[in-house]
Image 1 (tube, rainbow, N blue to C red):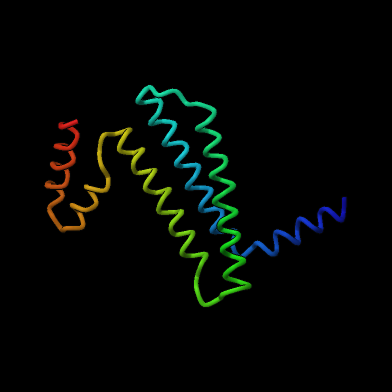
Image 2 (image 1 turned 120 degrees about the vertical axis):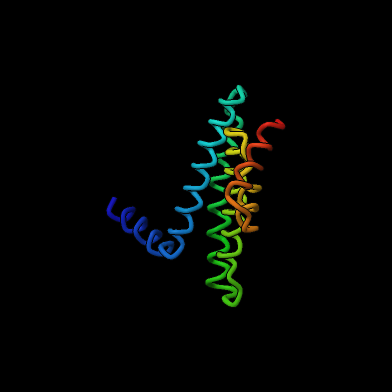
Amino acid sequence: MDRVTHMIFWVLTILSPVNAVMITIVFLIVVDFITGSYASYKSKVPISSERIGNTISKFFIYNLVILASYFMEEHIVDEIPFLKIIAGFIALTEIKSIMENFNKIYGVNPFKALINLLKKSELKDAIESMSKDQKTK
């Protein structure tokens, strides 16, 4: 048993530089799952075991891809930040999915609201455009 404990600590020590990235991705997957489940509940779509299985497989696949990119960056080509690029794409995918779920739950498109705010339009105009989008649905 002592040998197993040493092996676990050895693996955790090797992976310590990438732990923060993996925890962030796991957090985004969990938030996506929660918002997706609530959006399904709100639109009266049953939650199936297949969709839960997709989330579990996404958890493992994303973490394996992050580990592979970390080792590739660390041991093969250290000039290209593979980990940051791949983790960024995964995070953007999850954030986009969370925002789509937000739109399904509340009927507000957060992307349009953000674009309106970034265009330096008045906050009142942004709120009016969001309420117009909600009325057309």
